Length: 597
Image 1 (tube, rainbow, N blue to C red):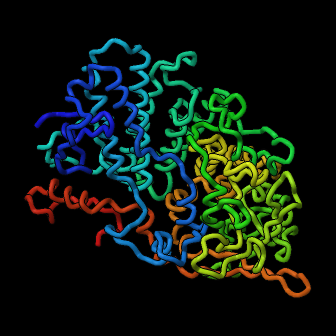
Image 2: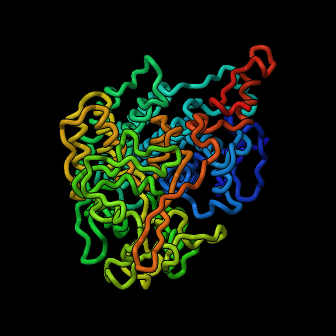
Image 3: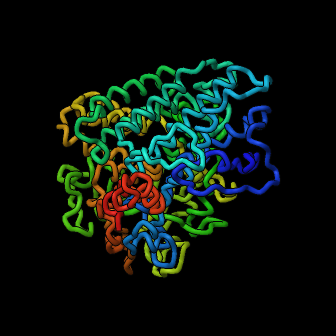
């Protein structure tokens, strides 16, 4: 069969095959060229290189928030994926959250094809440093793809070769987390070993001139995240080199590298009445500063704004389609009062299974359950619309968000409505709050930023017993918003709870919480029950606050949800291919715990 290359779709199934593709597909002839010609022209090879980042795990944030205890989706009582998530116990074939196994391996084989064949390049109109950058990009994306596989599936298969259609994979074995983590860090180090010239657009640099371009800062982020995950309770195996001490050393070096290359927490005060505070401003900061002239916190950012007003808007917002996902009372409860005291006892925040009886922190003297939104951590006001919150900072009292029953943004009693909050709260983070006249103008999710790196280092330091360092880096994040320092007298257990709570607050709606509850193995404690706040107003105008439960999310506290299921066709294929007898029953079962129906 003729070997061909699709310049548009970049389909390589004629030459290579991965465990996610068991058939040889004959692509349509239109727009295709012989694969041997790929290496003869700059445009052909550069098109191939441009494809290898497909399926990379660019942070989205919002769908994952409603899978865990950050949010409840507005489409929770009508036919939708969210309704299924809240009410169905999935098996492998019905699981609705895509882990991307097929897409990731498809792009890994593209990378392998490039790295194993680039020696065939015969054209001369390419600079040596650009070819080296192509290598760095290939190794970085291969590392990123394997990190995504590791954090979703745990074990995976490391492939560095390209395979033809006759490959049986009979000798293939699953690689464990330590092996995958080693491979990821090895790949990142290969990228970091390439030439660095900040004045050349063709090298792997710290500063780049457009979004979605990998940089050296993100290389250090990927190393640090890999070590953090490999040391976490879900992934650590006895005897692994990825102890908390080892993860601490890697994260410490990563942070030192970022600081040495001019990264720092965003500290620019917002223009008058443009945002509530610096934290709020950071998440809606105009998107033209990709070279980090002002925004030195962002390490890697997505390209494109998120249409918050349209898809996660208030009922009073012009042109909105839905209020999207609604922050839970559990998230609201995480925001301390301005004196630095948690609202609830972090060790046991609720006295009942359904979270209707808060276990208040006895040391907190500022919190008033009848006036619950006063005196809170400044990040609360930049993240969540609550009852009586100002819609616009520029005109503070012109429109207030009324979430009480019957208010202009009142809690929905209609299960088919997608315009009104389910929980009594709306998402404010990323939402530009000047006026509706500015159109659907909003912020962007940051794939990697320095505050996360500080908190990653703080967690590793805490778990490794470096409590003073853990406290200091947590306090750097708190100081940015004017929150009091954590004391250096906290025990390791106390500090662990404070750092975990700090992550919930600082990184809300940035995907992290979904990953955190799985790697900490606390999904059984937090995933089944979430609550909202129903506020009613009596004849005298007094507000009454009532917590209410959404019931039980069916089996979402089951440990099987700690890891994604491997697609069943892959499991069956590898049972066959690894069987010494030819009988699939004698082959290796690669399915994750709880998913083997």
